[in-house]
Length: 174
Image 1 (spheres, rainbow, N blue to C red):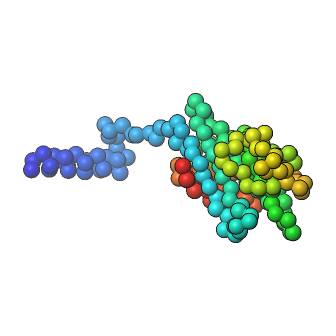
Image 2 (tube, helix red, strand yellow):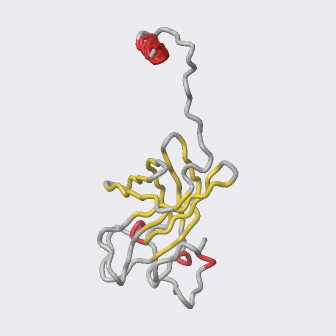
Image 3 (tube, rainbow, N blue to C red):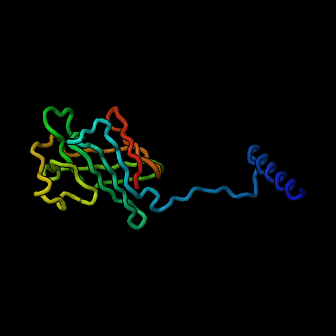
């Protein structure tokens, strides 16, 4: 019983000194960056998917010796103001200028017409050069723009990208 009272008194003293601005002998714990904390696969589930045209997007982040590299799997709609009368194109590209710091993420992607395909791209493909054209031919349309900058926030469970007036939430699936 005496030990419990001493523990409670010590805790109350620590709280008192901390709240009064006094110095305590208890060192402050600083959060340490954790390597690989954000490595994983994140999925944005497009709410208007159809059977013939799924339009989900994916971000794959990998830890490479303490820094991150990533791929973005998306649709041509990110480069087109309005699509009418045709299905979207699908792509996978490596993120450029990927920065993850203090809970924020930013990156650029750049495409050519040779990076955009007519069917969704499976996550086991690491780039457009890996995709067999017999199984997934190039998209028949042309891109109006070819680059885009993305910014948002990141936690170990989700990525939130701000796109124009919309927020796209990617939930961690792996």
